[in-house]
Length: 300
Image 1 (cartoon, rainbow, N blue to C red):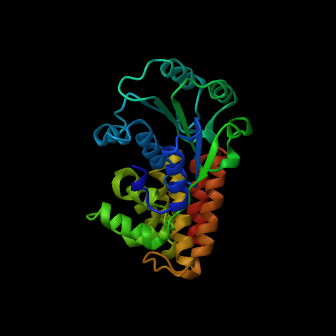
Image 2 (image 1 turned 90 degrees about the vertical axis):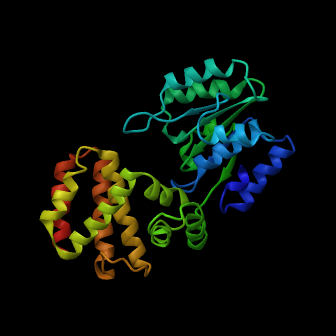
């Protein structure tokens, strides 16, 4: 399954070499910016570790249907990984694997541990059960607690070239719309581009980001406010919307044609959305943030 990963050839080769030689550490950290495929790579590694000779069982890992692959993700709007999740892992991994040579625990977004859950995981990593592979993902290696990072072998993932990303999307999502544009806007981040094709809500957020840029271009504060109001009570989505506007603005500044936006307004629009996103992350009132943003965008 590691062969399915686009780009990052040296990282993939290093993982395959360690796996085939039986030298893979019991704890692996895969890190890279959101959208660079660390979650997909984690499932690929888990599938190859558990079922090197059984494609059918390996596919169950990829679709989250394997009993031997335990997945842990954060909860709530903050994505925090709580201690109850780690306690549940500890119970499960001491059970005998049913059909594989071992078990895999995938923990997504390890940077979101709190102190209690991190200490609980650390105890397991210090004395792991035989045959259990821990695969942790993170947006940045430095964001992972040093005590956890020091017990892992780390592998980095990055965005692929825009051309590689577009080629991947054309091959795997031939009916998807805007493969080239998504590849350019998100700078070769296949995971982010795929989300905007596959996930209706995520696509809606990106489409609204383009509409918001258009409102700013035309100086239309009223329509901008109506659009922002739709996401006012969903802070994670609102943050994503503003991040998408930043990405569109940055793409425009790189010379990528954006129908909704002129190059002269791209930089100030991106800056205003960045400031608004930072305010939301600081738990500012979303309604006030959006009212101010709509007014500022209209006055550019």
